[in-house]
Length: 212
Image (cartoon, rainbow, N blue to C red; front, side):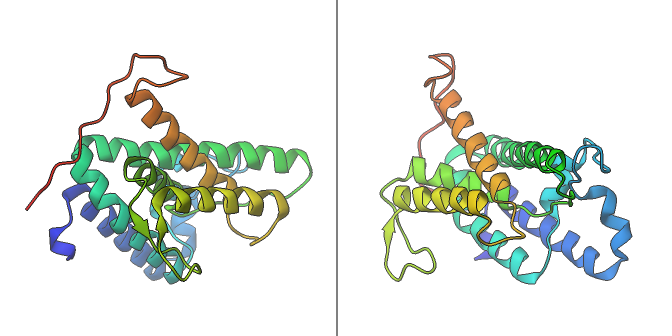
């Protein structure tokens, strides 16, 4: 199965695994400069990209890579490699920008800032795109014990992230970064389709192609 993945999806998965193994093998201080730190607390511009290739544990890595493969492969086959890679990395950056904004607000409120790692912002952007391109495709999302349409799954994931971020449910997770990745993906798709708020200036992405 892994050998049949399209090139960018495979390369992203390999990069995440290799970097995580490096996190395990090397002292944590080696990677401090590549985590996403709040503004004024060690932030550097490259962190908006590098944080998305680091993870906090095996389960964190596993679920992100599982979603990357499940949703990234059909999107890459649809869009081709260049467009897919741009979309994914833009969602990682958009999620990072959202997390920086939340971190700045927390610092203003007297809450201590903390670094962020994980590919979830890019992955959530892919999940949103999958739900928009294949809204009726059936998915099973834990803990729901039956299949639901992709568009419903996307709505539930977004609603849970918003609820968790507003209430503090599931602490230690950058819920607003997840929402930032989804928002970035939604805006890119609206632009490509020439839909508001971008008028008719965008280009519609290519249709799904069957591959053997």
